[in-house]
Length: 270
Image (cartoon, helix red, strand yellow):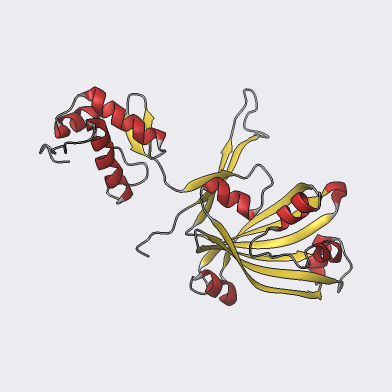
């Protein structure tokens, strides 16, 4: 950073002008995730203000979630990918809401088909039983985030008849309107290459790496509600796992402290 003094404008408090300058540098990408910001003394010299003024500016940015501070080390840019906890059993709209994104869906297909062996086993029905397959493109702030392929057994499929699944989620229809509580889910995570039709829907090249999350959701009484394959764009979503080592555990059976999906906003230049 140059030692040249940066003049402050008149008409707004000095700490707001310092925070605005830093905010612009962060949002423009000049400072990336986990980059260290200039020290308080260097910022004070650059703007000709006191360290108290600089501290107020940094506190503002910290309160906005743009930076984090480490005692004795300084201030750093926070990763702007948005987090939501996955320890809870959630639906897509809840995930997006928690991440600060506007959820949307586009129904690609919705039809009955005979259950293949794997689908039948997951749903707890006989092979070749007619089940509903629902394909949806899932959107965050209008941009493709994931592609869902969901199979429902006949009982739950008929409960969704006439529902607009572009605007409603399965969870909300069943829980809010019908009083059916989602009790538990079983997840499996895998990296896969994008199938051609799913890659096309997500706007990624064929063969691009995707994050596949397979999920079986159960209602009260252990009844299977659906089996779902969700293909996440790997440039938009990642997972973070936080384990906590307890005294005397010797690293065995570490409990999960936090489990998060990280959603990244689309780069406006791409």
